[in-house]
Image 1 (cartoon, rainbow, N blue to C red):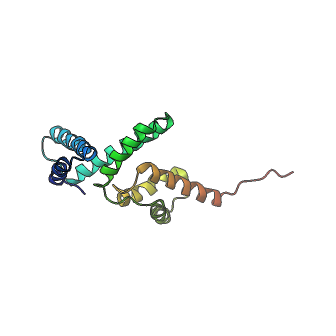
Image 2 (image 1 turned 90 degrees about the horizontal axis):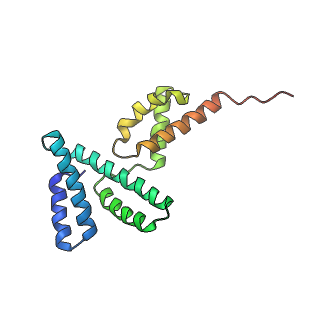
Length: 161
């Protein structure tokens, strides 16, 4: 996880190397850190910086998706490059298979069998994947697994004719 001093040192290195993309992205991150410090009236820790980085990465992913829908590959490419810089400061993201394994274990532990019990599973999985997975993806996997388990418990009835 990144801290403010590391980000500032990396910014200086990017300026010296004349790496415009990295320089601009780090300045944007440090500006977000500065805003958070003003809002909190004190320094932010690594956890808060990690949350800010996650937020910025999510914003980039959404912008990339919107740009691709709008047929603007130039904007998508620029945002993708910024996303790569931001992700270099984030912890390794869990793969879909790793999340699936955690979800299956949580479903077994909670005894959830219905999509309406998604909150119980999310309470168990959430702390394990915090900062390492997109919440939307985790939610989709939980919903999918609970829907599958519900279908296996309640087979569809056929019309007797």
